Image 1 (cartoon, rainbow over the protein chains, first blue to last red):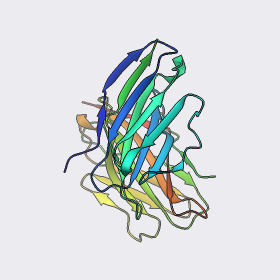
Image 2 (image 1 turned 180 degrees about the horizontal axis):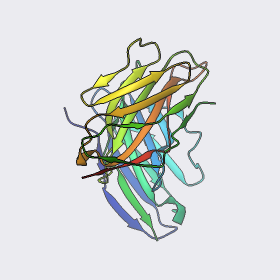
Image 3 (image 1 turned 120 degrees about the horizontal axis):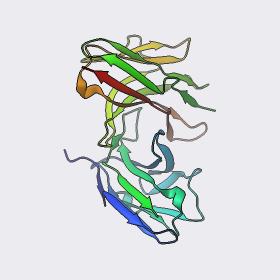
Image 4 (image 1 turned 90 degrees about the vertical axis):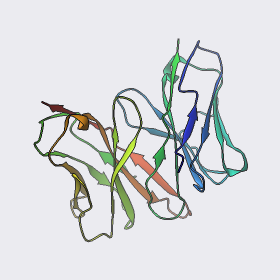
Length: 114
Length: 118
């Protein structure tokens, strides 16, 4: 079974530029999560999708971050414009929707904003 | 509000010894799941072990076991016979249903950095 795919793995941009990250979850996983992990901290949920609907985006800075999940499969997270404090690893995870199943994580995208 | 606490920012253990990583949680929900993940320096999050709130037995997976004390709201991870490859960050997480909805929420603790000494 293929795992969660993410791209790119690394990205360096200047502040005020825009960037987009892509995630392809495990086939059949209805729930998709985007996390921001700042160095030395635990993952912080940015947005959670169930199929192609948003169920939690309470911690997403909506003035600069946006995310979509087309057709309930792939997802894209965008930052526009980026700030220095957005430097972090962006993790995508997926899981089955029913029951307290574990999440499967992608390798992450390490973003550096200069 | 739900919360996960991991009070040990860093731990050291001698190779082949056992080590316990602490995790306490706070929730008012009767039904929830507790997870431990390992994050090596390479960055990927690896699922280790799961404990359901209604499970009577403590979960075990190979060298990993979960010391679940529901009344104390603690879910400590025990790693037996530590290996050099166990050096990593370890995160405790809780998954529970959001009230009046059909979806669940996962929260993570701040993590514990484990270093295994040869």
